[in-house]
Image (tube, rainbow, N blue to C red; front, side, top):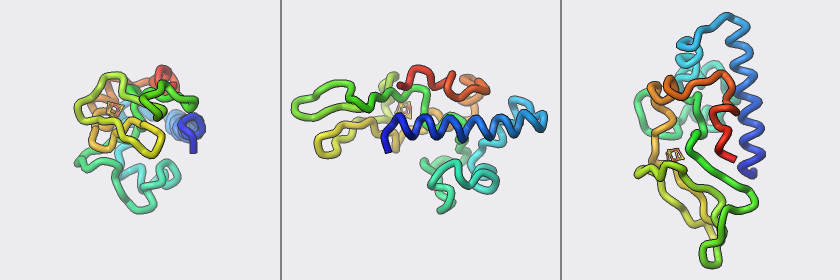
Length: 140
Ligand code: SF4
């Protein structure tokens, strides 16, 4: 799946959960709490493919799924730049020291597997907006 397809599909899933929570009168803090991994696995099994295995994307005790993927992620399915004979499709805009670039054949992609920045509750609170696409507006 391309970045763009994933991005649009995820935005829809996120919005449908937000709409449901708002209809119940949930507050900002209740919405953030709802997106804690343990609750999401139980109540939103289709939100992430890892939920079927009850598996976290990062080994952290309190993992919040609200800002998956990450507001700092940048991508272009057409390619951002050429690096020698390879094409780079994504990168981290804050150059997080926990992130890295991975080479996969002729493609270079941002590897966030060791970075927990967007999954901390305090980070979610700081960047919170009900509209996921607004928070992620610079990603594409
Ligand atoms: S490396 Fe971390 S901060 Fe950078 S895009 Fe990935 S998850 Fe976000």
